[in-house]
Length: 361
Ligand code: GDP
Ligand code: ZN
Image 1 (tube, rainbow, N blue to C red):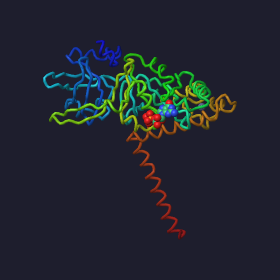
Image 2: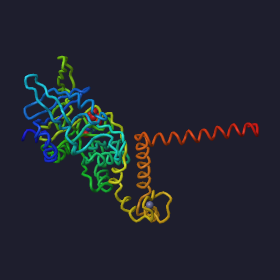
Image 3: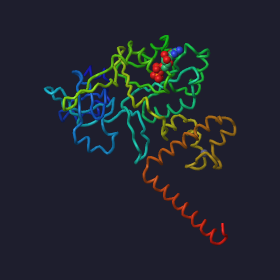
Image 4: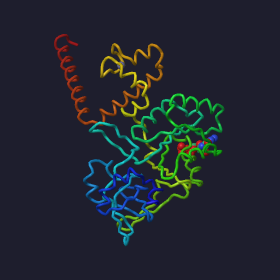
């Protein structure tokens, strides 16, 4: 099991794989996904893989299919040098849009990431709001966020910026690095220990590729092509999306992550704005929105200055966004809204006609 461990296998997956093991399955980790074709890593090496028709068609949505980082239950066909994926093991964490609640749209981009490195660059790119949103996303997906402030070599006030982050998010690990000069890279390696899986998020240009290359010790783009063979023997080249570092940790980097649009969800907001949630316990109304109610502890704290206006405003903004995503993702809720608006429009039209007939306008 040692090789599996270096691929990220741990007690969580051990526990969740018992029934599969009894049924004779082996376990592998998805390292590349390309149009429902996969490369998986096993104890013995890497194999092309496909999912069973059953899994393909029984999946309620695409998010139930294997994604990079997933552990899958496979049957290995050594002669044909391939594996068939029968099921996806429960995910420890999810990178994507996974809001709580029932009929919520899910878009899983990768799975089983332990550390989410949130990269901002210490030049103009540093943005407190964006950082908050990434933190929400990390908590929502059950990943541990780590803030990385890159390009320390071109910032005159590195410590000031780091102190600000530490002050605002005391529970979050934060580092300053320079991918260019190599400063701080060892610190990242020291928390990304053997079998730990990480991913990097942040705007384009902040230095994610540069940091990954520094961790790897080589230029990833040049070495990472692998060949995928389909059932008809056709080859395509694709890039390895789960990479093991020489120092032991793992990095997942997929095109989907690069294109990922930030979003927000309710339970993550509670973690990032825990002080507001705490204040809310003492509000008079259980479902207090902290906007207009009387005896609202949040508004009271705002009044005394205990809660800053800035913090309160970004809380409201994120909450509003999360609400919108929730509605958009819930067909019933969406229909209710549309019906409501249709009714309103109808009433307005009736009124218009009525006015025209009676008042000539
Ligand atoms: P990505 O889009 O986040 O992957 O960013 P890249 O790694 O491609 O880097 C964007 C640009 O920033 C490149 O021109 C890098 O050379 C530069 N860059 C990356 N890290 C550093 C750094 O630590 N210091 C400086 N000065 N430039 C950097
Ligand atoms: Zn309140």
